[in-house]
Image (cartoon, rainbow, N blue to C red; front, top):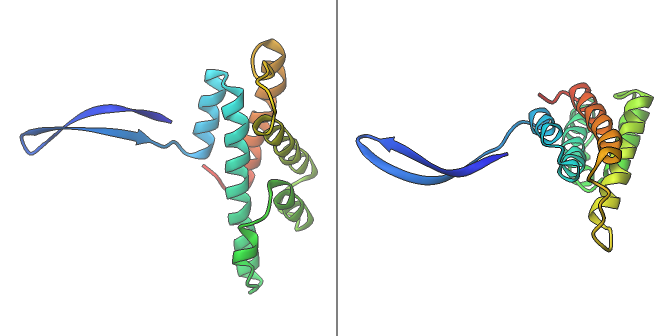
Length: 144
């Protein structure tokens, strides 16, 4: 995500406004890899996988003429992964990736004290491949 104050010229007058440019799911995750911001990468991976997974499930149920809209929105990432795998929308390796992202996201946001788990070479070896695998899952689910 890029943000900051930007100066715009509109019909001869200068206007200043704060702008936030939101990147697509894949590009935003690639940016977290570049920055080695593993906490943000894991949280965004989970968020993007949930959103794309829900969209894929909605498409599937719409095709089958089933009304599941309100129930689908409440599913966890683990449940979404299970549905997608059970419906043959993702492969076993992608199911495993989604479950790992789900576990890591919960561990990250529910930890009781600040840890250094997301810093250093060990974190680089652990989280970069996981986020890259999440990107592959997102591509399978139709994200750009």
